[in-house]
Length: 249
Image 1: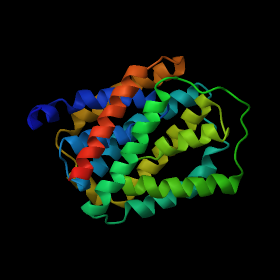
Image 2: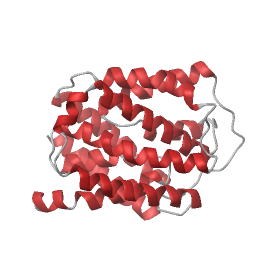
Image 3: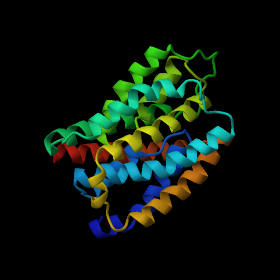
Image 4: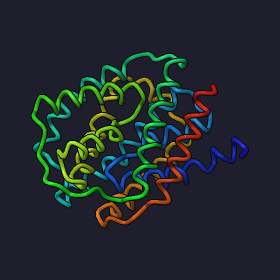
C-alpha cells in the first residue's frame, strides 16, 4: 500500500484499535505503535503520539468502568505507587533507535500472542478474587511501569493477564484496574518528556477524535461483553507484521 494512502487511513485504524482495546479496559498503545511503525514514523514521534491517544481512550474507559462499579479503587493506588515513578523515570531516558526498535518489537510480539491466544474466548472463568498484598502490587506496578515508560505504552497489556492469572480481580474489575493504571502511566510518560509534545504530527487531532470515538463505543461494548474475536485476530496480525518490520529495520 502507498505510504501516503496508509497515513491517510490511520485515523480509521486508530478508531478500530481504540474500539477493540477499550472493550477490555485498555487504551491501545501497542496497537497505535504498531500502526505508527508501519507508517514509518520515528521513535521520538511514535512514543508521545501513542501516549496522547492513550490519554483520550483511557480517560473514557476509566469513566465507563467506574460508573459500572468495576474499578477497584482500593487496589489501584498500590499499583500506581510503584508504576508512576517508574514510568516517569523510564520515560525520561534517551533510548537509541537500536534499542527501542527491538524492545518495542518484543512488546508487540507479546501483545500479539496474547490477543491470538485469547481470540478463542472473550472471558476468563470467573473465580473468587483476592487482591494482592500492597507491597506486591507496588513491586509489580514498578516493573511494568519501567517497561511502559520505555516503550511509550500504558502497561495494561502486561497487567491485565497477570491480574487475572493471579486471581487478584475478576475479569471486568481487571479491565477497570488496567484502565486506571494506563491513564496514570500515560500521564507520567508524557510528563517526563514535555518537549516531545512539540513533535506530535499535525494530523493528530483527527486521529485523536477517531480514537476517542472508538473508545466510547468500545468501552460500552466491553460493559455488554460483546465478542470481538475477529478484531482481535486482525490486530494480532497487524502487531506481528509491525514487529517484523521493526526487527528488519
